[in-house]
Length: 313
Image 1 (cartoon, rainbow, N blue to C red):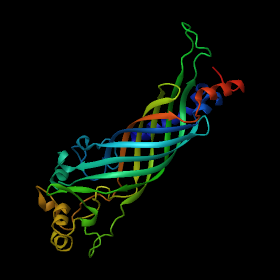
Image 2 (image 1 turned 60 degrees about the vertical axis):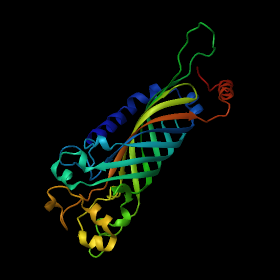
Image 3 (image 1 turned 135 degrees about the vertical axis):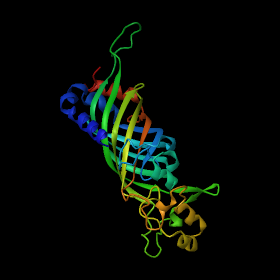
Image 4 (image 1 turned 120 degrees about the horizontal axis):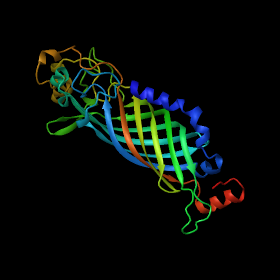
């Protein structure tokens, strides 16, 4: 987390020194105001389950459980209203996973909890383009004449707000069973916590790099860290509830999945700590393709801009 914050601050500091020399003014960026984006990549969950072979660190990008990496897919619409600023409406669908069996840290490995959850996130983000090189090539396409190459590269930072739906599940008797209805920490029972909602607000922020394939397409990579306001994306938050009461009220699946510890079981009895009461987070790294949809006839738009004296080669 600290490393990401330092990177964001460093990149932001370059805006005042580098931005005005790299943009080619409105003559070029206005031809790329509207874009459709799609892509995919990998996810990593940062919560109570799994992690490295050590005691977990809240929100740390270093507390990674690589065997539990999931997949991510996204689609979005981007509108750029200024050489330096854009906004993107995005839908991201991903699979989050965590598994105590993947760590050698003795307490979490003995606890033996695991989960997976589909997460569907809708968000609106604001982007600041901190570095860009956007220039078109030679005016005339004369064979054998070498002119200036097209350039269409950007580095940008973004943040925003969103809402995400999640549904944690665990493997029970050979099938993936939804955990929220089971109340594995006594949700809704006497002296238990309230039932949690399957939705949470989110705050995404990150960094992206884009490069032009041609005048209509770009490809890039985005790294996004998502802060949530729920501690139940992995169905783990508070303390252990009495297994006998869970079995009587919610069934055998609830009792088993609440406490499947495999060794040192005395550490995981009723009222002992099950989670750490810190909100969950996750991040994903996506390869993103962008299609310019600003004009139906891009070549005609170029001619119009040139005739109006606002197009520069």
